[in-house]
Image 1 (spheres, helix red, strand yellow):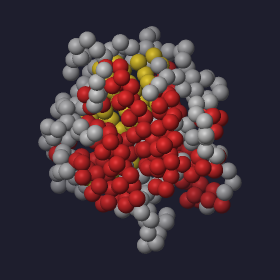
Image 2 (image 1 turned 30 degrees about the horizontal axis):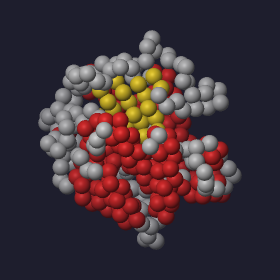
Image 3 (image 1 turned 30 degrees about the vertical axis):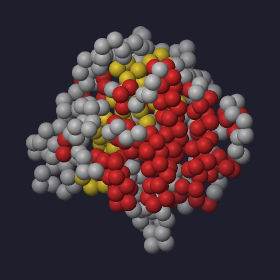
Image 4 (image 1 turned 90 degrees about the horizontal axis):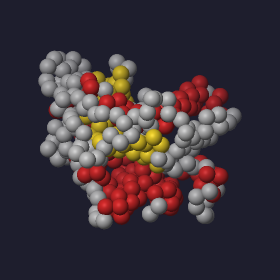
Length: 362
């Protein structure tokens, strides 16, 4: 694919985060308003970006946007879907069974995907990427609707073009403990592959994955790099930094393992943000840590490989008080951080709306 005439290629990357996907919705709505103001008319994100991709809940949003579903409908769908998908039942035994039913997630996603596969004409060729992980082989999968991508056509394997979008989203969102792995037929005559949440990889923040997809020739894109040739916008779902503490959960081996996995995922998110800021021209610098700051004056490449925008909500009192009035208390922000707490979705969305309006100037 060649560079678009007169403008850079544009990528939109959306993080995973469970019900905190409403944070991303709020920022996406603010981004649409900002673009509409700049262009003097309504802007659909699908028309603005050449490649939209996501992990887990970000895969839901990315697919809906790539299919042309209006953001208003996506938002309403989230609020309708979450109470059903994340409905707790005493019949599910914690630590022995997945807490929620993956069938419900796939059924609700299918309300906007139908039976469409990656080759549906509703998608712009090469316009969608979904990140998931094949657990039985330990490999991270970058799935796109690019006909030039590896494994698109049939062979000994089932061609990627046949994969249903609802099934891929269900796979990308199959977070361990929350949902059972998704089974997908990969090889003819072989047992199905077991797929889990793409966040159980370095790519809960899929910005780096989408950079790889767009620039490594094997993926079928081969886009040129440069601050004026490639633009990447990364949307978060809220970040919460909590010390592990000394809770009873940490005294149980399974609980310690869960906390360790969550800590590793946070480390991966920080590493992705570090790499993206170190390689790109940062339009919205984010502080990485107290040692290296926000890397606003650092580029480890001979020249920036892309222009980088990062929008997110930090669930931290000090950070929020620098941006808005009426900040929730620490205990409330801790409640907002839960990825399966449907009761906090509306206040979290309202908080994200206020921050997004401030951060994007709308």
